[in-house]
Length: 135
Image (cartoon, rainbow, N blue to C red; front, side, top):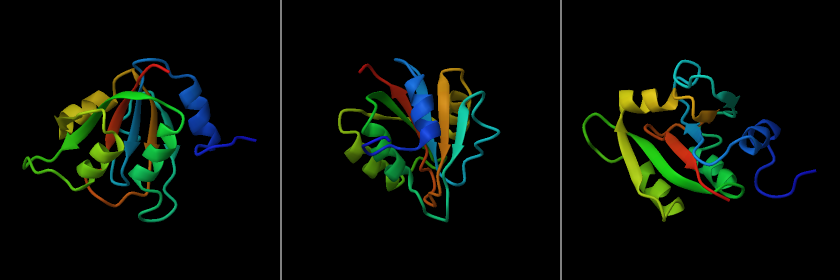
């Protein structure tokens, strides 16, 4: 039996296969996971609207992985969604790198994206593409 903050078997198995430079997408409930993730392992966690949140999943992943880069989907109007402040607080050593919507979709379809997790997150633009760092 696993101990710790991450016990989901599919997520643990996918992360165990990741190496330095591989990527993990944590997506909000609006993200077109099937169409915009290439060959990544897909995990659907949403159990009800709002649960779990992207930040819940991020906290669990941080308990087992180091990340060296964080990319976010920038709204077309250039605004900064409130969720970005939460991401920045949870990832204090990383600058959030904004990508426009279609560039973000393209980045999530690259072969380096090994795992894509859909959440029940209701906040818009709550999508986070993380690059795995060294142990």
